[in-house]
Length: 133
Image (cartoon, rainbow, N blue to C red):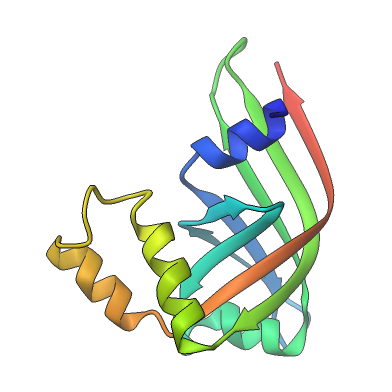
């Protein structure tokens, strides 16, 4: 497994950039899952990021760690986003995402987040770059 893949599977916060209908960037930190060379983000169709993806499919993202050398590493990329709405897929992927952050889905917060998730953003990365110091 490449360092980039290991890093994306291990880290917990991805900064997702979308573009709104006025061509203004919108950047938000999100929980995510990196699997099968794709990035998945659970969300709700009421969110600004989903509204933006409905207008502009192209997104950018960044995951990074560290504030002092030699422990600085990051990955950024560009890709195309697609909204997954089929309930069984949304439920299955949302559970996988939440289990990265909670020990169990029995947690009240995990249950509430799962219940509120009605959409998965699937990002197909087109290019990556990374840095380390």
